Amino acid sequence: MKKADLKKLKIVVLKGGLSKERKVSLLTGAGIAAALRANGHNVTEIDINKRDFSSVINAKPDVVVNGLHGTYGEDGIVQGILEFYKIPYTGCGVLASALVMDKVKSKEIMLSNNIPTPAFQVLDKKNGPGSLKLKYPLYFKPVDNGSSVGVFLVKNSKEAQAAIKSVLKIGRAVLVEEYIKGVEISLPVLNGKVLPVIEIVPQNEFYDYDAKYTAGKSTHIIPARLSKKDMENAKQTALKVASALMCEEYVRVDIIVSKGVPYVLEANTLPGMTPTSLFPESAKAAGISFYQLLLILIEGALKKKNV
Image 1 (cartoon, rainbow, N blue to C red):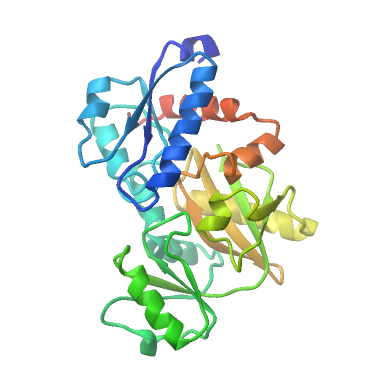
Image 2 (image 1 turned 30 degrees about the vertical axis):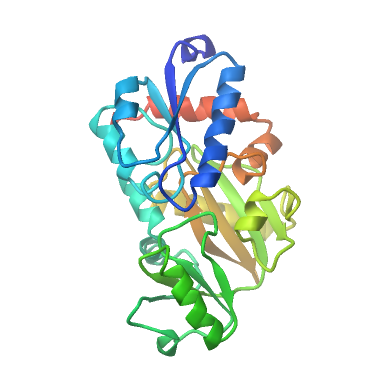
């Protein structure tokens, strides 16, 4: 579809949401809407601040740009509603969204496809630090949140007890992962192609929420400082992840390369689109402006068979 035709469409941008990532989503949605409006598009922003989707349905959009993050927006629920009403939307489908949002399920799928990922264990209210089989230091995180919300680097059993308590306040269970030292990279995959690979060097102990969304809290190096072999292995791994998790349009795959092995930390089906976000930064390095990136995503949404 030509740009002129796209400008005739009624575009709804979803933002906000009900998850712990609401603040980030508001920034993402505002950034998306501003870029589209600046280029002459008909845009309506809708803040999903309660479990009521009627405002979106009543808006009768031609296409929805999903700027939500986390539970309810990124886990297949919104995607399912949009498909029921035959409304095209950006991002992964229902099944892919649900699988990727569940970090345990996605890691199990990766392992079944021989994709390296850090060793892990799941804890809940019944299983405390005493049941851990992994050695410290370890990452403790919710099984169902993104943006590094509620992630702790834990070095002993005392810290573990506190981390479990904190994580269970925002998640249904605790994913415990081995700490792997290496080069942390992010690989945006767009329509089956890996965009320029970003190396992440956080000022903090690890790439936490603060480092992700505060300017100057981390350094991004493009392209990542990897050997040719390690770079190619990482790219092939990212493509394998996108395929295994059924992320057809776009996804961001986060990897840590240690001793030549590309360990997949996680995938993100709705990567952030804020000024400090990785996906737009990588696209820019590939010569794709933020606006052009949005057009690619919108065109992809309109081509989906399930709507």
